[in-house]
Length: 308
Image (cartoon, rainbow, N blue to C red):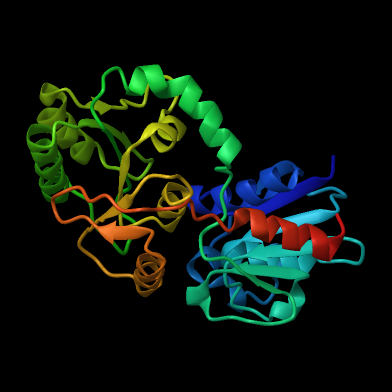
């Protein structure tokens, strides 16, 4: 099996994209977390004069493929690029695209070129086979009755959007209303960015009504929620979570949060244009949907271009 080393900082969204590409391409993946040193951690990576001296020491061996994500990963990948090793970068590297063999971006990056692959969604590992396997695994636990299942994927504060006690209360009361008026089951999973105060609010309001909320103990039911849901609600702060949600056969609705991101707004608008998501306005909506997942197409183009 061909090995791919993944260069990125320790951010879940970045790692999930690189892992998704490597896993679905059939590569053996090896993660190399990049840790910028001070003062370079306060300076945008494309402006580092000596990139390899700006991060803690690392070793990638002789892997034939290096996949980087984010600006730090990009400048390091370009600095160690050599003949016989494929350099793949995910997201806008904010340096010359010629420094990589392939660059995988989203439409909002507005980039093009001979070595650019455009994906409508973030890359991920959620294949049809994985959904089928997890449906069989989780269906009896998540759907013990005939009520429609609403999966709720909660993010958190990320510097652009806010999810605190007030926002959690607003979402929780809307979910409680759905349980009472539409006779649905609610299964909610927080992310690593969901604050403890917000989680406490969800538990206080929803558990007495019979909702299931993952408490962080045992196996994360996230894949089960994607596989078993009749409807999916996901907070607006995460392109990765939305991308994974739209890879399913369930209608996806976006839970708005206070804040602003041009990139995420562009992405959500593009998903609305694809008729794959709608904004949640307090009531569930059902419409004909098909799974939307560009990862398989990206994998085909990567392997066809590199021959690996």
